[in-house]
Amino acid sequence: MIFRQLFDPQSSTYSYLLADERSGEAVLIDPVLEQVRRDRALLAELGLTLRCTLETHVHADHVTGAWLLKQRAGSRVALSAASGAQGIDMPLAHGDRVPFGERYLEARETPGHTTGCMTFVLDDESMAFTGDALLIRGCGRTDFQQGSARTLYRSVHSQIFTLPPSCLLYPGHDYRGLTVTSVDEERRLNPRLGNGIGEADFTGYMNNLGLPHPKQIDVAVPANLQCGKLSDMPIQSAEPAWAPLTFTFAGIWEIHPHALEEIADKVQVVDVREAAEFNGPLGHIKAAVLIPLGELTARAGELSRALPVVAVCRSGARSAQACVILQRQGYSDVANLAGGMLRWRAEGFSVEGGRQ
Image (cartoon, rainbow, N blue to C red; front, side):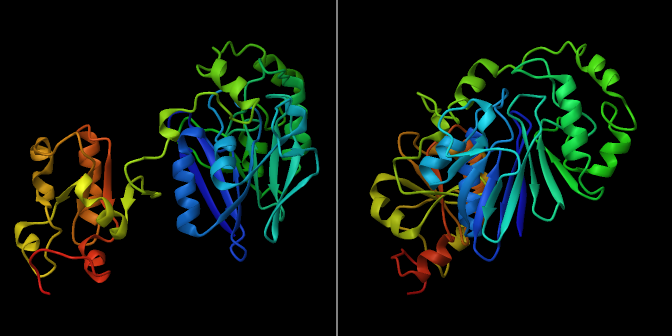
């Protein structure tokens, strides 16, 4: 099985990709709207097909990427039927199975943080995804979205703490950089729910937290009750229109040689190799501007901001860093030539200079 834990720094949300390696079928738990490009890039690079997205609950601190992934990847949206959300393709109830290839996740109702919380347990009970019901040495708050401390206590003890002690638990969030825990650890060490703490103690504790409401709640909850469908999608969800580009999991837009050749007269090509390489055996692309990578920060102003920029080097490594530098300098339409001059020459595109 393929497994990846992904992170959104803005909301401290974890998303989880699970895939059956043989079939290539994948599911994604708790996707974040602003990370849809990243998630699609990872799916493409790993050769996976996203069958569905699963939500552990209706989130109050970020907008889900479920609806946008449905539009762009053809995935279905799975969410608790008790959540009250509209637009669910797979309304889930306790005990339902969500298959991906030869594997599946079992949905367990774990309300308390919200009424529609679910924990997803892998078929062999080796890992479970608890959302906000159980965090690492903590738990989700219970003071809004029909939350109930008493209900949460019972959910955790009956549906999560009954899993095998070695079962790894993956939370919906962590604000300290912690990534995973286990049933045994939380039973013994969770200061709110573990080590024999009683229901009355837990309820009293949770009812006196006095936390402010999440900053995004007024936007996130209404949007997530529509599975992430917004009337005005954010700018970062729009795809670049100046060229057919591919977004990589490394966070870089790439352009392939054939696409660059078609729009060469509408962009500026910056070659970030050294002068000896620029004039060396591989040659260089016609009209390319030579600015070695080590000089790019100081000389970026030589490039026009009115035209998109394509960065080029020998293999695509240095030019990927060039894209990062140019973006920091305020250039928004920037792409890396995939494979660099090695691929450009291998695919037979013309060059100036070099060995013919």
